[in-house]
Amino acid sequence: MQLHSISSIRRLPARSIPVVTTSLLAVVVALGGCIATPTSSLERMNNSVVYGQMAVDDPRIVVATDGPVDIDIDSFGGTVLVEAIPGLKNTIIEPVRHANHGHLRRDEAEASLENMDYVVELIPGELNRETVRVVATSDDLKEHFQGVDFRIRTADLGSVRVRTDHGRVWVKNNKGGVDVETSHGDIRVITDHAMNDPIILVTKEADVDYRAPKGSTGIYDLRSIGGLVYNRFTEARVVSTSPDNDPATFVAEVGGGLNPVLVRTTYGDIRVAVTEFPTGVGPIIME
Image (cartoon, rainbow, N blue to C red; front, side, top):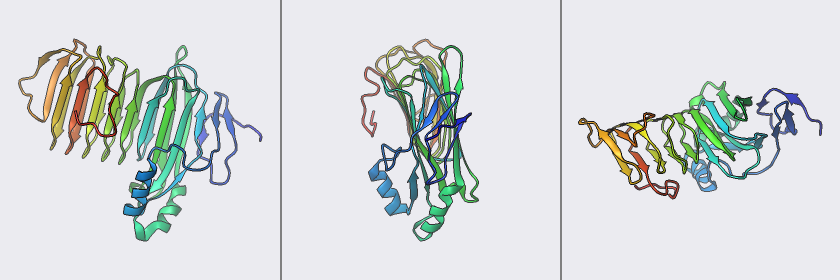
């Protein structure tokens, strides 16, 4: 199969999926079936049965990266899962396009899947640092029914920036700061690496969890409208707190650092912790 030299990777039409490489050695590998997609098989089944969702797993995208990788995503909507997997070669992106028009409009939903598109770029930075940038768009008049989910895995995850809508954003084992804005979807940032960089997490009608290990610092500003704020600092000292704190507000200096930790949500709870085993949690976080 002939290889093509291009500057970025764009979603390929169905039934036309060659192996592609770029001058930056990004490669698209065609693999069939539902393999480790952003949503579990149980969740996909639930979405189909309950909401009449139509979805398609696109071929995974393998970007040849070497060293620390920052992730930068701008999407019109959908879930984003980003995780560091030590020892993994390259950066692997698994996209899923979906449409939620309802049971009586499944044909319309299926047809609308072709109106979504995304582009993946590898942007070299200083020294050995690189950025994988993903931009997802839709030209459908009813894009609020649509979304593109992305599961992204890389060996050495640096900073993460995500802008999406109607989707959850989960980040695991990042070494750099995180800046996330979404809506109607939970945000979860849990890492075993000490965090001294800015953390900004904003959603609405959803929960937010932020967990980091000993050595993590920050000027915390946590506020929920219609929800509660919980904090647990077993591995960090709370240096000072605001007299205006209440069950839905927590403002404090933690660990002596000046990096902002700003979290906002509405009608959802905020849970933050600097603890011994921050990533030792299951799908549901209760503390």
